[in-house]
Length: 140
Image (cartoon, rainbow, N blue to C red; front, side):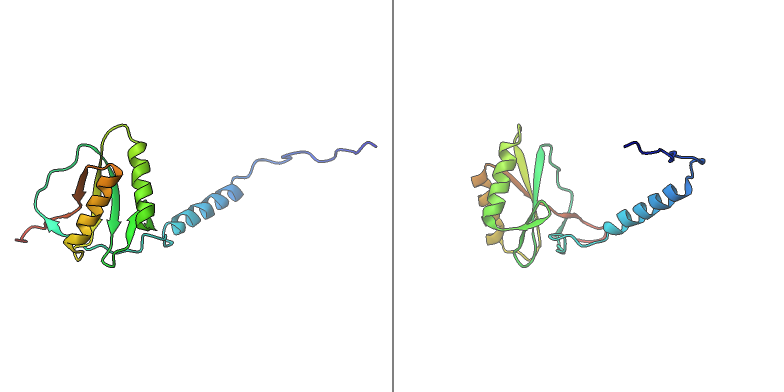
């Protein structure tokens, strides 16, 4: 059976208006999608402010701990075993030594910070630093 072909593709001129409308709608959705909350990023850290401290020349891996003691790694809330596995995989995947940067709320105790540093050392990270905010002018 032979079917007749009556349809011709793009009989008229190419109209840009529908494509522009779809493009701008897509642009709006992408911009609004950035405002949606992401799990693990709802924390509010109160970092201590310090004077001039030296930076790090090595590659770093970062983690955060909020005032309630929740641990964040790769923008997700993790438990200590998950943190251990993540740090070990970061160490194994790197060719050079890594430095752990701990973004800790200033209400955490020294005992909690020491526990995290020892946990990192057991994973193979020998250097660990605490992240701080720069001191504003006029603060002692």
